[in-house]
Image 1 (cartoon, protein in one colour):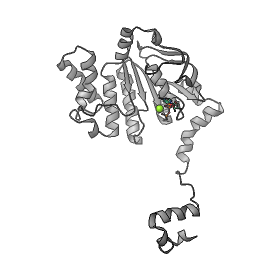
Image 2 (tube, protein in one colour):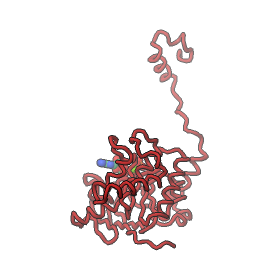
Image 3 (tube, rainbow, N blue to C red):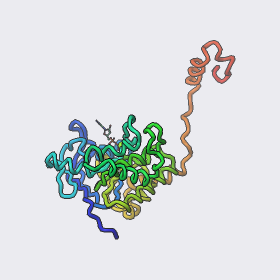
Image 4 (tube, rainbow, N blue to C red):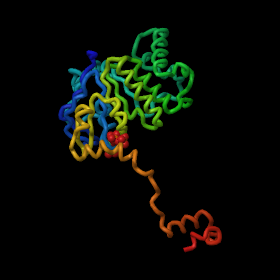
Length: 288
Ligand SMILES: Nc1ncnc2c1ncn2[C@@H]1O[C@H](COP(=O)(O)OP(=O)(O)OP(=O)(O)O)[C@@H](O)[C@H]1O
Ligand SMILES: [Mg+2]
């Protein structure tokens, strides 16, 4: 097995939220170094909130966050800056600057934070873009990219500084199943290529089953599970069982249908579309 020098991320008695109102309480979680962890949970369970706090974009209500041995709440500005430089983030929409070509978007962190020559920068940028299958798209602007290309471009930018830690918020959201599977494959390849700790937030149970070394489930304002996927699959906890079986239920469920519309409402709609006087003549269904 590959040995790793990528840091663990440890949350100790961490309560997070906004304006003093907790969203998730008392988290004691460890994301193992050099592994791919996935945070999963229902909408509003606090997944993105957790990422924002680990990234120091939001101060915790209480508790501590460690990356390796560094207590993130007690760093000097310089130390925080160093850690941020080695931290990659893939935001949901790729977060590219619309006025810059792809090649310049990806080069931006290197131009801002390193003293590398332009030639070295271009070598790294072209390498990362080629790795993401975007070698042909250097000159395109973000609005000329498809959703899947934008995600891959976001990954190329997140990787450009050789991060030790990479966070991805919903990397497959908005992608069709084929593109989602391609992106999952890319994440796996990245884990083989780079020695890093990856934390991926997702709704996607299929991705979790295919990718995760380690799983954290949030719900009911707390951490409901942390551990391996194999242990999780054996769980008899009713909430977790329902959660895991949801994928199968969703697959077998009939398509979402509209709730029946009352005759009264139908009449109202027809009237407003056609004009009151014509209603009965044009559509007898609306005449009741
Ligand atoms: N900036 C904010 N200020 C106040 N409350 C917020 C803020 N951002 C999120 N929240 C609240 O925090 C809770 C958790 O939101 P969060 O975005 O972390 O959920 P999530 O698990 O990422 O959901 P989703 O799967 O829909 O992305 C929600 O109740 C939300 O309304
Ligand atoms: Mg979210």
